[in-house]
Structures are given as C-alpha cells and as structure tokens.
Length: 337
Image 1 (tube, rainbow, N blue to C red):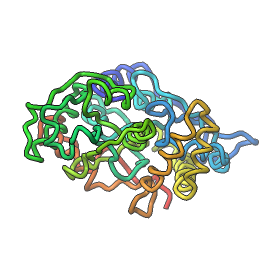
Image 2 (image 1 turned 90 degrees about the vertical axis):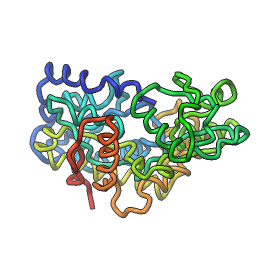
Image 3 (image 1 turned 120 degrees about the horizontal axis):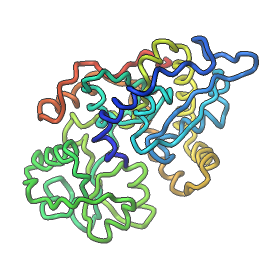
Image 4 (image 1 turned 180 degrees about the vertical axis):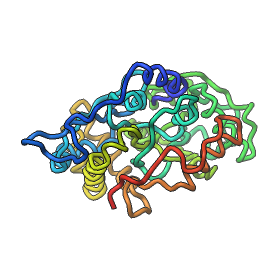
C-alpha cells in the first residue's frame, strides 16, 4: 500500500540524515530497565494504518509485555516519506518496512544506518487477485486483462517474470496505472487483477461477497519469497542499545505468539486499541494470518540469509538494483530464542 514512497526513499533519507544527529537514548543506559519507576520510552513507526500485520505490537502493549521489559512503546503511523526515514534519521527506534522496498537504502552512496532485525511474517503472502469469473488461473491468463499497476520498475519486472515463466506474453497485459484503495470495488469495475497482500485486501474482497482467484508470487518464482514486512532499526542506535533492542523484541515476540495461539482474542485486542477497524474483517484476517507469523520455523522473527540474498541477487542480475553484498541489511542478533 505504500509502494509509491519506496521509489524516492533513499534521497529523502540522505537529506534527513544530513539534518539530524543520532538520537540519544531516551532513558539512558543500555538496559531496558525501570529507573526510579520510569519506563524507557521508544517509538515504533508502522508502514501504514494499523492492520493484522501489526497485531503483535498491540497485544504486547495491551497485555503489558512492553512494560514488563521496562519499556513504554509509542506506536505511530508513518509520515509520507515512510517509516524507514524516521528510523534512519534517529526520530524513531523501530519501524516497519518491506524487503523489496529497502534496496535504495542499502545501495545509497551515503551509508544509511538501517537494518532489519526481525520479520513479522515468514513468507511473502502477496500475489495477484482477480474475480474467479475472469478465469485468471495462472499468470499467462493475464494476457488481455487489465492489471492495476503502480508503474514501478521492480513491480513491473516481477509481473513480467511470472507471466513469462508461465509461458505468457507480458506485452499483452494491459497495464492500467491506478492506485487502488478499494479492491472489491475496482474488481467489479474496470480492473481485472490487483497486487494485494491476501491477509487484508484478499479477506476484504471475500467479505464483500466476491469469489476470487489468488496467484502467489512465491509459488511461481522462488526468489520472490522475500520477507514482507520486516522490523527495521537504526544500526548505530542498536550498537549502543543492545539490551533495549532485545527487550523490545522479546515483548514483541510474546505479542505475536499470543496472536498465533489466540487469533480471536488477539483480533479483539487490536480492535480495542484501534476501534475504527471492522471486527469482522480483523477476526477473519487474524484467523488466516496467525499461522503465517512463524509458519514452519521455531524462532519468531528469524530471517534466512539464503532467501534474503536470493531476492537481492535476482534484482541485481536483472539490472533493478546495484549489487547488495550477501548477508547485508539484516541481523538475527537481537531475536529472543
């Protein structure tokens, strides 16, 4: 939903870094402990409006997991230039972003101190949704159909890849530049196919009574099983505040594991914290998404280097990004066991 911001992210952050020094730790010291009854205050910037990708944070806040770790966490929505800009410039300790939006950060001439410290979901749950009646059962079937594009190089290259991998001709896909806010409405009008994250937009179309097909990118091209979304932090801040980072991720892990075990209760907590959300949508979304948080891995938040590197190698091999060194841009160092 925030793809437009990614294209200008690196230049914005260079300007932000030029004007901002490194943020001092709000409560002093390297341990997230209460000092004289006070909690250490940190800021988490979301990638978009609150949704079930973020449930674990709201559960941790509601259930007192952050407070148990000596933290007061302010959850805020992002500015137009994105959460990572605030993290890079020291205005926030943590933010939410996506692996496919981070290459401009990692390849900037001026070293931007940002790295991913955990993934929220183990596998890429995005893909192309369409009405079942349109018979788009595989990427080749997009020929002659209207696809709503953000008109971004990486997006269009990925679309071209999956269509051609299925034996189709991408030139025959009708690219309609359109920013879709209501997927259900768009699919019933002039748009045949939309890139969505199923847990939210896909579930919303189902709740609108639509019968849809979903083609997942990861099922067509293994390199597209990237991490989406991830928690990012400022690497300079991390180096000086290791215990605080670990405390934040311990509490966050408890929040997401609560959501895994108790999806209905977690949905109710999210709506309690963000009352403008639809409880019906949140509950169904949470039921679908909860098993995806950890999937087959034992350690919540774990990022596999092979998968991380594979996507960035695909980007550089296809001229979509400068080369990103293997293992660069993420760490599992701060994750709880």
